Image 1 (cartoon, rainbow, N blue to C red):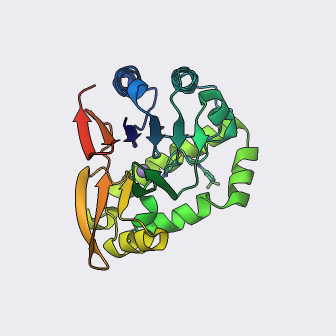
Image 2 (cartoon, rainbow, N blue to C red; image 1 turned 135 degrees about the vertical axis):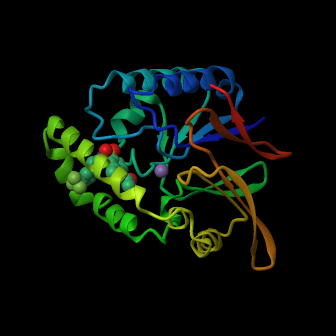
Length: 240
Ligand code: OKV
Ligand code: MN
């Protein structure tokens, strides 16, 4: 009896080893779990469910097979794959969840989120986020021909990579006040997120009681999962 959490795989056709690592994880680990939660950035980029990229079909098929084997799978959007929509959800059998979701699991109340909204010190990013998360702007973007969307997305990623090289490390991490505010707002003592690529188990004080923030690692050279059971919450790195 355990539930698994992953995030920040950043799957893309250029990194087949990560895809292989994910397939291995599904067959070896996820298949035995009660449920699988993917907390965003499953994909490095997403420009619309109509993108015929074969990798997308491959991942949808693998997740669908798991769902048909009885594993419920849930997805929260990341800052990269936030345009992933109902069509991919149907194909993969994943259920899309709101960006902040409270889960009651084996007696613990756990706030699940991608984690980018906690990085409030990075104002440039938060400004970018407000624009691309605007439903009207998304509708206009999705109305463009796929080829234009792909071209725009490639340009935006190149620009962002340049900008991030100049950002100090500290503003790329979560803001401690934002963390507490979110936990108090949802009345939880547990939080699981990804995004920062700083895997760790943090303890913090919340109104004089102990709270926990567990951060998933990105899948660069190894995988990262959180396993929640009745007895424990474990952050587990594993080789591909
Ligand atoms: C995702 C990020 C690229 C960060 C564009 C409206 C707009 C959506 C989009 C295009 C880009 C996602 C969808 C991508 C995340 C980047 C660069 C930086 C920091 C528009 C709605 F503005 F053009 F109208 N996009 N893609 N970045 O390539 O996956 O998160 S993406
Ligand atoms: Mn992210």
